[in-house]
Image (cartoon, rainbow, N blue to C red; front, top):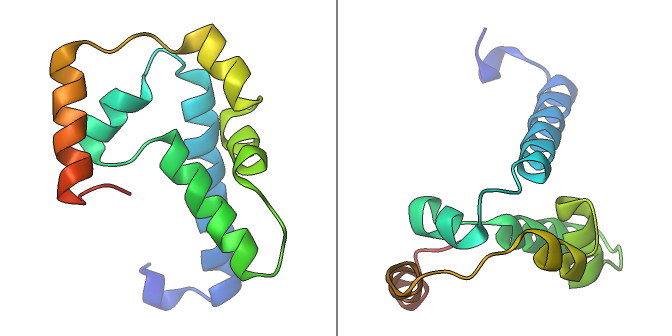
Length: 106
């Protein structure tokens, strides 16, 4: 079966389920730092939060950055940072800056 063979509702449900699995996976993998995700994949939890917020806002829902981050992180962002964020080394920071300057990020 291909995406062309399924109805729109089934495709929507599968995409939503895949998103939830990604969100849950990222909530469980607190050892994976956002800077590492950005440096390797060009997006991180904050990008995912922003995309979620933008989609909600496009639908007329009032969701702010903090609310969207709490959905993605599974807790307030500040709490996640205190519990799990580690200091990045200079090499990671340089690569991150290059990605941000290039516009190749989510």
